[in-house]
Image (cartoon, rainbow, N blue to C red; front, side, top):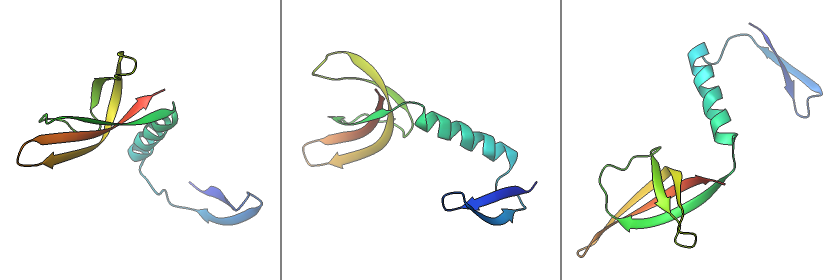
Length: 98
């Protein structure tokens, strides 16, 4: 398989790619991930809560915004656990669909 390559604004032709960079399975998974990531705009939300074991990156959680009191689902994109003498707190970074 040979692909034509264009550089810059598409006016300059580059050297062709003659070997696939990824296997077919990897291409399909990457395509699905890219489409999922750009399908809808997201709000970035940071939420502090009491320590809960078992949270994982990529997990879908249900949360409630205090200003609207309506629950929503969001994907966990970051987890920070802070331990002090008095408590263990968790800060989650969430991606919430708009």
